[in-house]
Image (cartoon, rainbow, N blue to C red; front, side):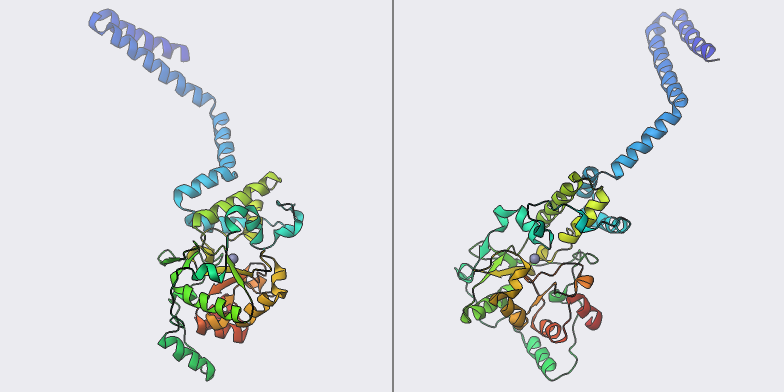
Length: 352
Ligand SMILES: [Zn+2]
């Protein structure tokens, strides 16, 4: 049957070629094309199962490989695939204790300091009050507006304060709430190169000055991080875990416990500041027991800052205790949170 079909084609085209010498070469060429298509088609039909299984293997490989995810994420914009990630990673469960830490120290697997130890060159950059005041003019107390004062009055008189969920200071950013697409902010840059949301600067300086009056030298480090930087940190960590033999899903889940998911970090909007002191620079939980750590815990709310990831609230924030990570929320919200012992998620549940 097959043979006859091929012979039919050949005799048909050679017939044309013999009858008309002008069509000799075109018809021979046409014959070769038809034969080629015929053979290719026949090859796929007879090897159908083989190609189908190769196709599914390729699909499986692509979907389980971080490399292709990274490319995919880059093309589509990371935030749009992020939800898929979190949905998928819930399936697997990896205990951090089972993992070898990537860095030399086994302690280094808590909180953001893992991230710091991997980026020493850029992140060791620290800023003291003097650095920040260099060429910077500021007006004491300017950040406290009329409405702030009115709300503070309410808080002191025991009335339930009213908060606005569209207030930029209260924006909720965590694994479940990525940075809203419409969120807009202006970065303020100090002469020293440090950057953060410009609306935070006044209160930050006031807080650092107040600490200094008490003989404490606070040091700010790694305030604003670009989303690219956050994404690089995140992807590098996934790769390290995969080198240890974890699957992509397992590595993703383990990474998301120690490094904030790109698009979900307060550092990316300039509202978070990692603060330690000149006598205790590293981002370690031991900072909580230093004089500066205790002072910040006690007084940061007076300047609108909260300790964002408190001890005992890990099950709500999803982040380890970080006595160095402060988030600006404005004075009245900070006062309420401090007073009632609420983390930002709980504050949202209650007031917004
Ligand atoms: Zn931080």
